[in-house]
Image 1 (cartoon, rainbow, N blue to C red):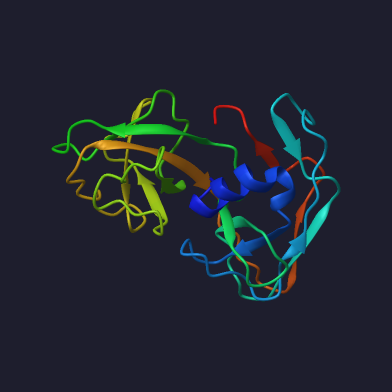
Image 2 (cartoon, rainbow, N blue to C red; image 1 turned 60 degrees about the vertical axis):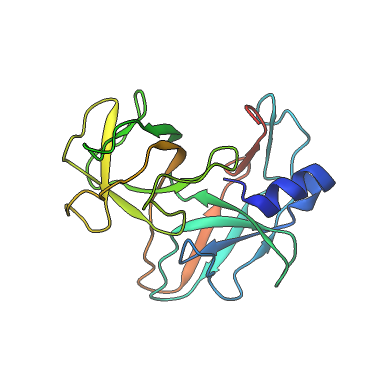
Length: 200
């Protein structure tokens, strides 16, 4: 999910502006210290039209007890700008809407989520997320109201649904937090991380 700085970088420098990848332990952008790794990209169209995958395997060092929640792209080896927040260990994502606040249900046709999945949200075309949903919060999908096309979320596992007080639309991303009991590497195989320009 490109954030504002990422959209600017893409327009200014193209994929070459995305130079490093790291792991974040909070959706606000807090990252695993010293974990950023250089990333280079395949030619556009690899692995598929409109896409450029990472050119070579990448190993991100993770310390004991750390829990990466997502990956992030940056424009520098340290400091610089975070350009994106990207799901870890999942390809499930989509666009959703909140049409009626009374039910606290989020609608997305064939969303593919199940109870206890973890999701985060992003704005669509700069729109404001339906309050009180926040881009810096990782939510649990809960069983309440869960159908093929509808879901609700909580800030706790199997907790009460977030009381959504505004209508609107959003992007959602399923991510898989990964706790490292001992120090190790989060490995990204070649073409497993894709800069996808389709639909932009």
